[in-house]
Amino acid sequence: ATGFTHLLRLRASQLNRCAFCVRLHARDALASQESGDRIAVLPAWRETDYFSPKERAALERVEAVTLVADGQVPDAVYAQAAGVLSKEEIAAVEWLAVVINAWNRIAISSRYPVRA
Image (cartoon, rainbow, N blue to C red; front, side):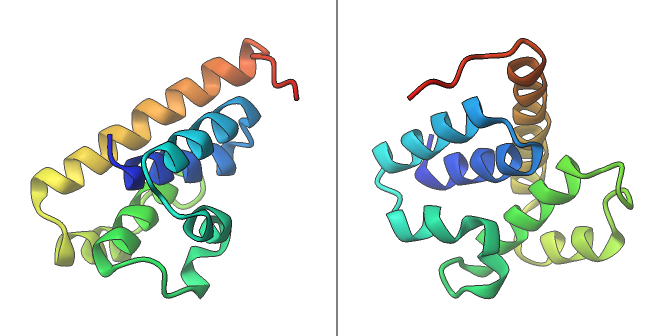
């Protein structure tokens, strides 16, 4: 997996407040050569210039899928993604979001330990 895919997983895990997965994907992102700066600014990615248009569309899509109960996936989010991502890339981002959200729910409900 690329460093950026770990950032996508990390962002969903942050939104779900899954400490186990936040730690895991932050470590994986670092191991995949993602910069500490990109990891640090991820919760405020919209206010930065650290992410390309394609990355921004993917982050927006992962957030919308993660928060699907809050306004569904808005048409504007779909249109933004369709403007810069291929159909295959959109599908890959959606599946990544679905899978990490499932893992977040397993880790949270199973009380995966997060010790120093």
